[in-house]
Length: 186
Length: 314
Image 1: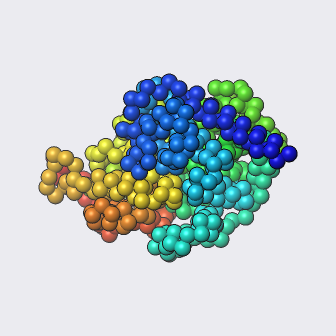
Image 2: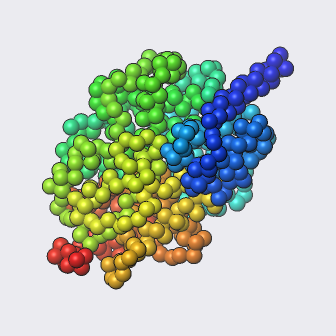
Image 3: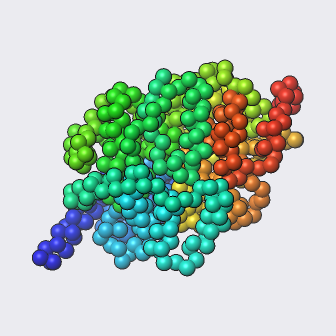
């Protein structure tokens, strides 16, 4: 039973990786994406290098490079790609794949997005104060909250921090359950 | 003129001033907006990173609710991220019937279905320029923003990936509105540069670099000009709560990293319009913005006379 599950997860991720690579197939390595990316300076592999790794079959190396965690979804590469490739979507697909199938390579990168969606699942509408609190608790970093402390205090002063609103609480539970049963598909 | 209004979560949270000023300005301009009943999160920038199904279902639920409660009405969205999520969903279901079936299966549990046939997804800026128009805004101006230089900041998601109402490489759609308010435009090429978005939560050091570059370009004198009037922008105008938060709240950290000093006011476009239409500062929640400089407040209280402003510019 367990073996079957592992196998099916493995197959699903394999298919997803194949779909990502297929969408990148026409890449001609011109580098417009890397030159346009505002965050390329902070990536271990630039977007162009990432596509190259994937197309040459170095999926593990591409996932380890983790460049997709540095994508801020600005869509400049997608807009400018002379081949019209869905590069920003590929970055998001890689984040989904990495978080689900290679958590050991993902570290804490997926935590914020996961915590965000948990917050949406609970409250229906994002509750920012509760979101940041859960994020700090999940990250278990002693220094992270302090990086946001000055802002937190200023927002408190502006009356922008408050307990979560319950107006839409639980509203999306059914949808989340349904989406989970359907299974994630690219 | 009437729209189905999707405020989105941020406008109920840290961006209350955006929601309140949009409502006040729309009322002043004679535009009716009705909130979509029972709306929920659109998925923000998180859903697509976690679960493909949810990145379809979350925006679809809201559009289906709008279609059901207010058939045929365009959906007005002030938040750029919500706007793109809703627009992308509409385009996806219209382009591919299997995506529509998949989406409707996900939201069908509540008895909802989305056809995408009526009601376009419209960003606030699109509606301001193309439906209301700068002339209609100009006619309502009571306190022109003379002597105030605005850096129009568009951010990413209203410009890219879809080319809808502006040039994604050289955006300028805010300019006719700002000119109608009597403001001067800060000439710069950073209007479409990314603010770092959610990297501010996950990789702050990278986002601060982007924010620093944008803030410095807004404060810098435009090239080829000098003298008293060439001091850079007094205020950055934004149309996205994420951009506003990143540019407004992290100025100290962003500028310290880069070695520059000084803060700059960052307001929502709707707040600037409200001020020019004569709404009091409390009514557009000016006190909620984090970085409103003394110099900017001074210019609001003592606006430069038109003749003086014109003479100095000339």
